[in-house]
Length: 85
Image (cartoon, rainbow, N blue to C red; front, side, top):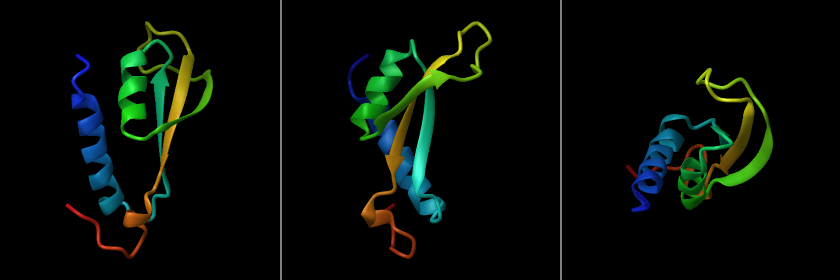
């Protein structure tokens, strides 16, 4: 769709994740290499492309090629800080 809905949903989910998991330092998301829409949504939510490689796919019809995106915990969500909700 290209309307930014995926990016907004990912960003909102990550705000809740950082608040609910205070010891988590990074979020790691493997994405099938052909799923470029997901790549763009993750990049739009400040995730960084961190690796490319072979993983077992969730969908057996897919091949093993994946990309991995990561997002480090923002300073505002460091353990002990009050998180916005």
